[in-house]
Length: 270
Image (cartoon, rainbow, N blue to C red; front, top):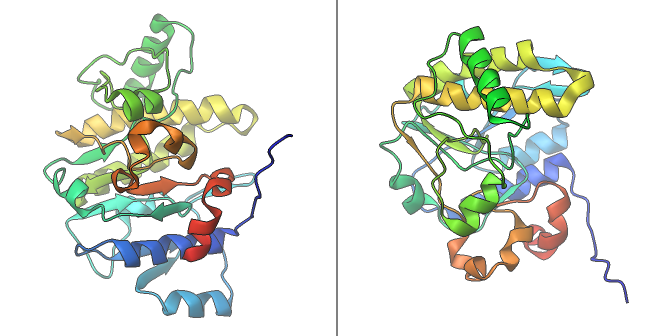
């Protein structure tokens, strides 16, 4: 027989509520949830958000191209009603399943911590990759990477999750922890990269190029770069690996829309 898992579609708003409720239930340290919304929400949705312990900011997109509407640069620069020492930037399609506080505390001395992204191999040779890196830090007047970026043969996430490797170049992932001062420097670079490099007709390659620019920008603004442990920003589909069968080692599940197939009961719980 062919196995076809039961699927359930969650709206973007439902994903957000699942995320917020899971944080409130499982995180034990001092934090404030700040939610940035760049599309209209209904009165009912506002009432639901008001029932949760969350600061809501309705904003206009800072970048628009076709169906792409982003306000993520504001996650780094927006003046918050309840300021803190760090900003932990998350997506809405995540579930907080264990207290991440002890993991973050180990990294507070770092300005940036992020896991390796799946892929930034936008060229087939090291020399072309070097040319891309040089073009980016020259065009955007950024410092050259402290360690030369190496063309990767395998998925960075796979290496990091299962091999615990510290690869020679930290590659940008939007799930990141950043000190306030560094965040304010990073946000404008982030916005400019999208505005000047994004090409709708070449969505994948231009997005990778932007991501590579973000990696260089991370090093430009941050003297210390750390990494979130494997188990943070965890894809549910990877939990079949023996390393993560102990659910206590998983902190944030990144469902990425399709992966809600694997977490339907857990998502419904929140």
